[in-house]
Image (spheres, helix red, strand yellow):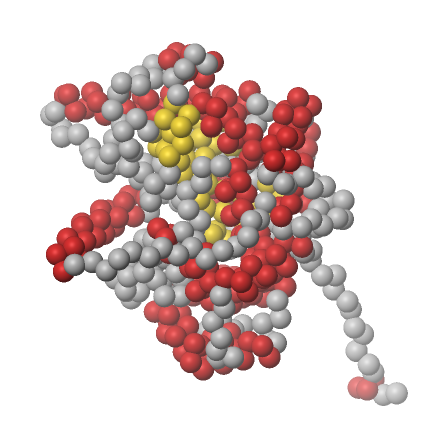
Length: 457
């Protein structure tokens, strides 16, 4: 056989397993119960005053020469600071590594209790953001060994010590990356982007009403306001064509194809500003701002504020399953030649398949339910038609709210995602189980019943 006719040697490349690193940001409003507990004693030691009124308008700053207003402002800040530090201390006492206000020096292996200065506070409630430590699916034999246990403990502490309130301004953000010191490949990024577009309407169906057209988490494909600079005009046009001409023809093989999309430019392709030269920041449903950073995360921003471990774990599992299945799906298959818009039942099947692909460290796999996923259902809310006067009143109110939200975006835009800041600070190798500290036998026993109640063991 001549040299030119030699058969090429085929090298089989091992398939990457669907393990992930992840973290969560949870925005809450908390009202301390001020009973006879140790928590209350610790709050009082830090000068927490339950009679100090909270701030209904997070944008308010006292006039320069108004001494009384500045005194109130300082007392409000004192209460928030006391609450954050005592919460962190309470988590520590339950075996959860936690610190308060350490985003300027973030730690990879601890929870952080920090400020969320864009939340308006109902009377008696104080704004807080919880930023989880970085978890890895590869580090544990089952989910119950790790984040399920810790999330149950976190919310048990919150409920024991405080009343929890979530408002329209509260949200939950789930960050997922390919693993410690790994990034999604270009093909995997393209798969995620295709899944986002393919299931865009279904995702809108399954989030609560106040998250469907929320200014902080606009649909990547259609946005919620053409002036918000929250969605790519090119993506919106390609998405509209796909609904008429077919997903592969008008979107998957073109705008989201390998000649136009890779990990390095996914941020601009999926969320470039509507106005020329403007970047949308991170206020979209799926944020790719950090996908090419050291942390390598894709952030799902659509989930609502949560007041229980069960709710938090559902949205974590949803994000896991969606990304896991997106990177394994053959988007060149014939079924994607059509124009069919997927509903929440197809999305439910898609997410559940993805979860079963995620292996634990012992090589086993778990069901979607054991990951914390509930049934994915359509959230519908119907209201009666409004009168002309009611419509006018609503439009005036929405215009005022939009102006305020834009001002809040400008304020929040000056700082990045708290979890991304933390994840980017991680050490060069994964944190070992011994470095994270041994969880006490009593703690494991205490949350075992809670996991059983939630059907997660």
